[in-house]
Image 1: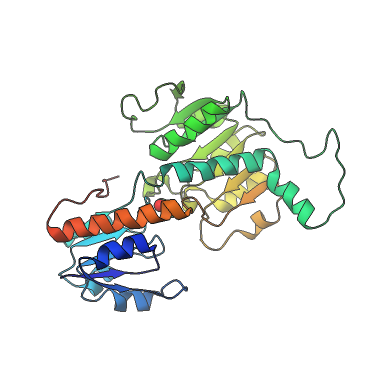
Image 2: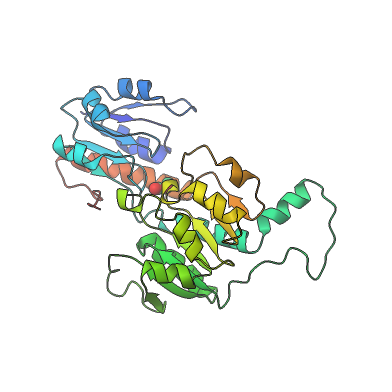
Length: 321
Ligand code: DGY
């Protein structure tokens, strides 16, 4: 029997699967674990399930000890995991792709609808009991039909977003260094373009790329200036892909029409400038937050850890980016 450490609360589906085969030491407080508690908790672990709020670096891995075999991140994004540090210690790192694709695309699409149709703004008017009156020109937004969505990063979530956009009658352009698998874009009429071109032509720029050194501040002052003044930014990927100061400046200057954000550069902090703006929709990183999807993520992370502990290959090892 091995020791599996779970560094934050996860759905029972994951914990039950682990407990059926191994000893489990899990963080049970509602409060997110502190770094010091985390380094203490992982001591002696053979496998660790982590959330995106934990930084898995050399210090973390060394605190666990040389017996550690696998870190199973309960998230598709793994910018919190130092993959080379894992490799250097012979630790396998895994993530949870596919199971959250549709849910996260729903969130991105919801953000796009909310910001282009001003739903958040309208709801705030009702809730604050601000007087209002139906009017022909009241709270007019931008319709999506016939508009162009520019998808940055045509991976699984980008493709799921494109399918939704297609169903809403949007034209699709995308930018990606990689080529999507054959057939993945069937029926979408999606055109691959250079990133610069995408910024010029898109009515909505939606980010679906991983956060890497190369995508840090991918969206900055120059990129906002290259967008249409009527265009919107949607970010459901990772906060630091966007230079938040530059975004606030671009919104203030009217260089873009608005933004829908589920992620932030210094999460959970949000740039105060964004809080003041009605043409910005802000969600607290809810991308994959459904009961079903979180259960599936926990189950997949547990299955990854169990496979490695049995001496098998993990189901979804992280891919080198
Ligand atoms: C992820 O998995 O990377 C999301 O950001 C949280 O579900």
